Amino acid sequence: MMNSHDFRKYAHQFVDWMADYLENIDQRPVKPNLKPHSIYQKIPDLPPQKSQSMQEIFDDFRNIVMPGVTHWQSPNFFAYFPANASYPSVLAEMLTATLGAQCMIWETSPAAAELEEKMMKWLIALLGLPEKFTGVIQDTASTATLTAILTAREQATGWKCNRSGFDGRQRFRIYCSNQAHSSIDKAVAIAGFGKENLVKIDVDDKLRMSSLHLKRAIQKDIASGFSPLCVIATLGTTSTTAIDPLSAIARVCKEFSLWLHVDAAFAGTALALPEYRWMIEGVDNIDSFVFNPHKWMFTNFDCSAYFVRNKDILIKTFEILPEYLKTGMRGKVNDYRDWGIQLGRRFRALKLWFVLRNFGVEGIQERLREHIRLASLVADRVMHAANFEMMTERTLNLVCFRYHPVEISDEAQLDRLNELLLSKLNEGGKLYLTHTRVKGQYSLRLVIGQTYVQRLHVEKAWQTILETSKSFQL
Ligand code: PLP
Image 1: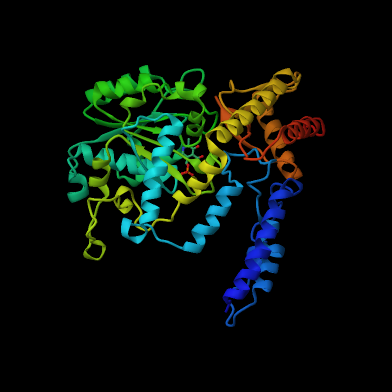
Image 2: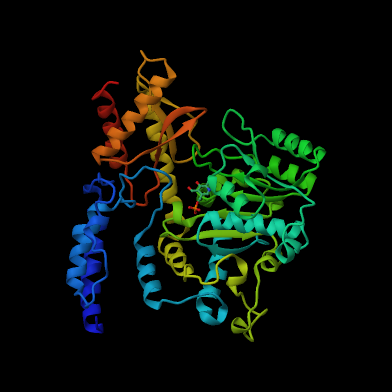
């Protein structure tokens, strides 16, 4: 077994490897081209009986694992939404792993609880959220949204659902736009409402939820005997970063006394820029809000910041007190196990503290503005290219576009052409993009959000897209 001497030796060796990896990451193919199970087959079916040396394990990490890794921190990674990281965040994660603290209650690590409380205040200030809000770190936006829906359910049933389950007298309805993230469908199913009771509201030409259609849907449901419960507005939809009109939606929610949850998983980070605060006009009237520092705020996965207007309702929904978790400090401090679904919690506030201090607000703003500027540069290239077109207006750092040779007008053919272009681009390893459908049309998504991405990576990516598009025919 490893001793402290070997731990020190390998820790130094690993840090050198980590620094080299991050320094040269743009030289690697972003995504491996592997047959399914090829890594699995290289791993023995049973664990070793005898201890193996760290050197042997590390060699296998380099030879077996690394060829199967998708390099999310590569500046050539333009797929999905980023799960970006940064040097200060990685350093904090090393310390977090070393402490190995389980931060379920204040007693189990007072520093973790108190740093989390303060970091949530820092984020409120950074994003311009109402000062009366209170925050807690969750693992993901999916969990935070489920937490919001469960809290809305309990408040509406006077905490009866927690006690005795659904009584079948009310059929609750939940509303989001038809562009909202699939984590909402999942949360509605898990919370016991039934996916059929998630009402998908039509969007306008910019793919934003229509508050008029929302109001009509609610009125129709009430007339049909349903009980409207909760609305989820999205700031920055996954397909196209459409921004739902929050203040109009908040007015509808107020009129019908509905819980309003805001899913700003990706775009929430942009609120660090005063010029994007228009997105949260009406925020005083929302009930809960989630955004992921682990997406675009340089903080390693996982770290999702969840804010509520009324923390007492949240705690009343999730608190449970077995004898073995009773402490004398209860009520005087934050026991975060009562603020969500999981009991055991990692010390995630530490990496936020490191990131916010090492970047500083200005450093974060500078990076975000640069990402948005680079995205506008790509959008410009697309608009000026003869055979390409934008599929939506760019709002932040996502460019949604497609290859459209002038001689092709058949939509099915254009879909196939873009599907093929995407697979050729991703097979090449020089960049990684993903796709979506915009109004039914197959579209490529290019997101510029990797922490250390520079103009040269973006220019190279655009050149690769242009060259690849010319290199094949249907
Ligand atoms: N909401 C939106 C708008 C998203 O884009 C995503 C993921 O990309 C999620 C929620 C889910 O995020 P998480 O992986 O943190 O659950």
